[in-house]
Image (cartoon, rainbow, N blue to C red):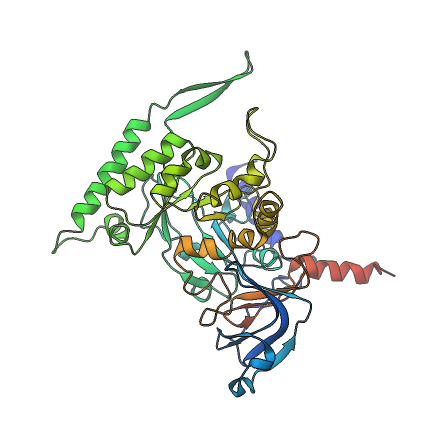
Length: 440
């Protein structure tokens, strides 16, 4: 197959992916309209996201903001014009937040033309992910159906992949979906060691990474230049150095991706030495080995899914199930993310449910995917919990939203906008149920 044919084949594959089987167009739901009338969700069991549960409670919101949390009979006359929706017996949750994700950037991993996650070069702090976000991604409806209403979308690759954005999962374009245009600069700390598999001995060989020192030198040089750049009054604009200034002023956060305990400590100390004000860590089980260091330096942690097997013989079977609990009980702010195939990002609530089954209080586990990621990303003043004055980004579930068998959303709102929950999966289920008379 020639290069041209390969390109044409990929384009045809993408086209077929986005066209429904009866050529009526995409099955993606339309963007919701702004809230037009105030609402009271009455009689639900409210999980505030702040550790408390309020039974038989009403949540009111107007113009996209939460205006009331309390008993319906205690609501004053100022709520007489609110539309009352009875949700008795159902649960009300703050919208879940998926941090550190490729949602909206990668669509089909095997089709390069549908991905925009990589960029040339190792240092790209000025690269804003927000401009590449695709609100037409078919992953988005599947996330919303499980209560995930916001996502921190990132790029990957290189030492500094770019600046992430926080996006709402509703809108016709990135301009409508953007919540925070510049959330965090993502730094992928180089590994001090490299490994290779020896087929003869069936062992993994560990050796020193020859490029480690040179990569550290590049990082030191960049941050030193950026620090000096900020002191120059009349200067020629340098986009890379300009984009790093928010790290020194505290207006931006630095997300450090590091795998091994030694690398975690080195990376944090590097950032602190260069005057970075706000740091959070994206790592895995190694965080447990340096928990005292992280607590001492007040470093929040974003962890991978709890759905994971032990990686070595000396790990307990429930090592990843219990990891959020073990770090949280040390006083660290912990959030959960997703790694691997994007289509299973929708399992985020159930990662938190697993943490609850292995040590965590259930409302504390809820915070792993609501208030804690909001705190880490600096957006907890508006989202992450149900409180008067915050955005009405919340949903109603018929059952426990952290339970894979009980999670069943009946309605969801993003800044008060009543979003359509049914996506391609639900539409196809209805279509083929009718065709084959399912259930009759």
